[in-house]
Amino acid sequence: MDRLTISAATAADRDAVVGLWTSAELTVPHNDPGEDFDFALGRESSDVLVGVVQGRIVASVLVGHDGHRGWLYYVAVHPDYRKRGYGAAIVAAGERWLADRRLRKVMLLVRDTNTAVLSFYERLHYEAAARVVMQKWLAPPRPGDHRGQDG
Image 1: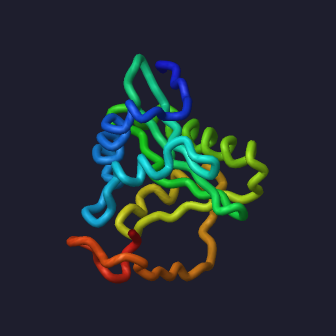
Image 2: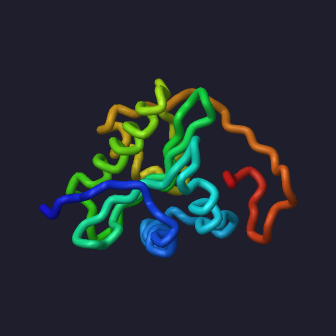
Image 3: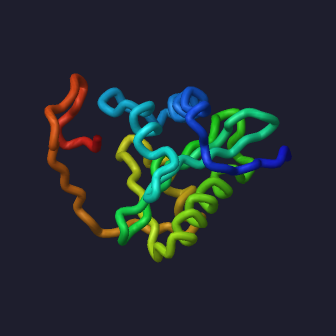
């Protein structure tokens, strides 16, 4: 197995990371993944971590916190590089990023259209939490925004 090297993304990684998120089928029409990347990159409370094999970005996680809970978003491994442990490695890197900032709990959301990943997270000791997620649009929805869906 090729070695996965994990580091913080740079602005120059934007297109490759957005391409990865698209190939991993994590994007939706009502979220602009490029804006998400730009918003999170290199901030005090968020960042984008990438996993690289032979110069190619093949894994990523957008990690952040609200001062109380840590969150993982856009956990992705390129389809050609799955089943090699890279998913577990990029999740662990996100967890370390949060632990280094003294966060004690990590959360993630799984879209109801992506439930095939639940067993992956269960193997990493994540468990479903009995919560109701509510939302409110603070800006007018963009074309393609759907009421009741995340965004």
